[in-house]
Each structure stands twice: as structure tokens, then as C-alpha cells.
Image 1: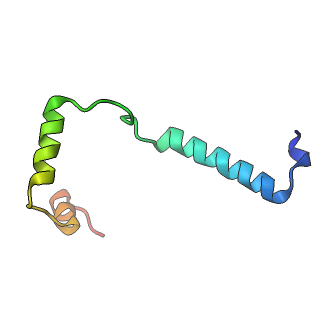
Image 2: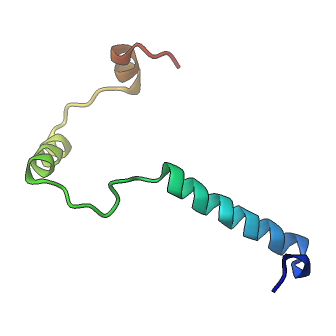
Length: 67
């Protein structure tokens, strides 16, 4: 099939798909599908089990960010 044979809607969907694929390549998670190490897994479990939370504002303040 040639691009000239596509309808406008088909062309838009094709371009959207190509852009989505490229953005995923550039911005995607490089760790996707990798195994967590035992130390990271333990820290994550402890963090999720904890009731202590900090707000986004607290994080921003610690990092010197403003939103």
C-alpha cells in the first residue's frame, strides 16, 4: 500500500502511531522488564508498608523547586 492511497484519517493514525513509537523509544523506561535486586525490593516493600508520607510540596521544597 502507498501512502498516497491512505485516507486522511488513516494517514493521521499512521503518523500518530509512528510518533508514539518514537517517543516511547526516546522517553520510555530503560529499566522496563528488568529484575529488581533484593536490596531494592526490600526497600520498596518497607516503603509501601510504611504509613509515613511526604507531599509533593515537601519534595519540591527539598529540591528547591517551585510549582
